[in-house]
Length: 116
Length: 112
Image 1 (cartoon, rainbow over the protein chains, first blue to last red):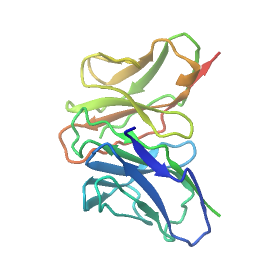
Image 2 (tube, helix red, strand yellow):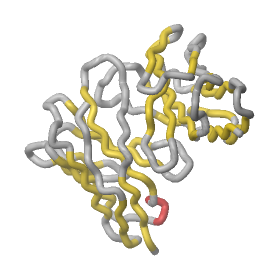
Image 3 (cartoon, chains in turn blue, cyan):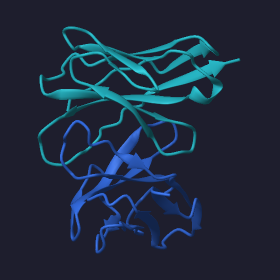
Image 4 (cartoon, helix red, strand yellow):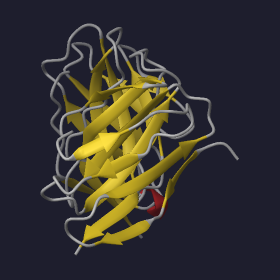
């Protein structure tokens, strides 16, 4: 089956620890994205990558880091510098990074991170 | 990207049509209207998009006013599984990147 996988679905960490969220896609998409969602709110863009070995900051990149060493993988690290890391994290991909009208984004199931 | 305005919540009876409005009065000529929905605790799902003309697919219909300042997403026969938050997004075509700017959306509740 083609799609985007995120693991784990639920993640608990102690305050002050870095944690890495996994995102893998087998859709052969060039572009990948990370969003954060807080309760009752829409999604906010953290980082995005239009091509391997390249990525750009989104609207709320502070306290987060990413890498894009492989086309199919775009892990997100939530560092101890992120003041309020507890949230629902969503990964997405699209065919490429253009803004063409048919370039819809496909989302993974999300990871709910709770920092204790 | 243009800002959108949607009602916070709506209710619909099962089997009836659900009409979800969206205002985008500052939309530019090259901006498309996209609709996504998010079922609780899942990732958003693309529904439909359009530029000027009305569009229909297997999930929904999109009606865009002639002045393009507002649009309506129509689910013709709502089911309980259509209960979700629906996001209306306008996005510039032709610029670099493919960022989607999500507002708070409309919580649609389909009642039995």
